[in-house]
Amino acid sequence: MRSSRVSVRGLAAAAALAAMFAAADAAWGQSPAGGPNYSSHAASFFEELLAGRVWVLERPNSSLAGDRGTVWAHYHAPDGRLLACAHLGGEYAGAEARWRVVPSRSFRALYNYLEPGAEPDPGRRHGHTPIFHDPETGALHNEALRGEGRWAVASRGWVQESWPAAMKEACPDLSLPASLPVNRRQTATRIDAMMAQDPDAVVRNAPGSHLRGPGATGIAAAVGRSLLGAAPLGRFLVENDGFVLTDTAGARHVLVLGADGDELWLLDADGGVVDSGLLVPVAGEAEIAVHYSRLPVRPRYRIGDALPFLPTGERFSAMRITDRVAAQGTPVVVPIPGRSETVVRLRADGTLTAEGGGTETVPGTWRWSRGELVVTLEGAAGEVSIPWRVLADQSGPGLR
Image 1 (cartoon, one colour):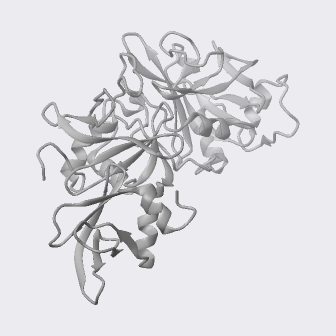
Image 2 (cartoon, rainbow, N blue to C red):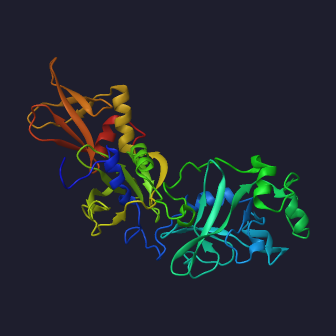
């Protein structure tokens, strides 16, 4: 293994790679003093999750003890209106505001319930906060900065399809849509008691919720613990080897793991590889830098922070090609110097066999690097690299 590279094939190396994705910098936006606090999903996911549904919540850090643990309910109308039954100063009152979820370079997505604006700073403008959803439990919470960059949970609760009966009684004059059902089981005004009354009301495993940012659970909710440990990081990296990831600015990348080094490819709008970076440990392996071939930036990431990349579940076209040709045994023509036209057959384990023109076969290996398929034959001098679009042209339609 070359000393300038790092591989994630081992768990210890995977721990070092946590920093590759963690703290945002010039390449993916800046975070405030509180550190990188990425919302768990893209803004579009939260728009789908909330529109036409009710967020049942409480404010655990309210300055008034009587408000803490007391249920609020927000109905998020698809047209952007927010109808709230709010508990402030010991009394319930109905209110109407606006809601939206906006993309953010610094936080991935920001929930906003009061003010307009495309990229507000939640530390300075009330109402704009990173937001976090757990697909399995259905828990939903948002976090806000409070003095000197300290994050605190602003609201916590869950999303459901109905309006609690307790909120119907508390705010009888709120003009809710007639199509919104009232949950007659939910008569309590304490958050834990209401959850116990109808735990099945919670929306769990909503469409797209599995495409979650690893470690994006909220700094305040983590209560000082590391956001992403070595084991879940290692699983995520291996599971997403060859898959498209998006960063907080919406740019698309492909993670490519290798025995001799790991790479991050940057894609253009048409799916072309415009740059590739090597992942290099720095700062005593407490951070990882991405050394791009063309870009004049070398972003660095701290170990233990959440990843600024979201999985998309989309297998990159180049990897879909080799998946298919390896599974089907499809022959691939490779221009090997010093040999006549050479047909190779790839295997899923990274090995191949080359047909020489007679009955002989020659073993070899293949791998992806810098947007090209790299082929090595036993006994041949050097390696041969084939751009993935060239491979696509001879591998059949629909894969470019």
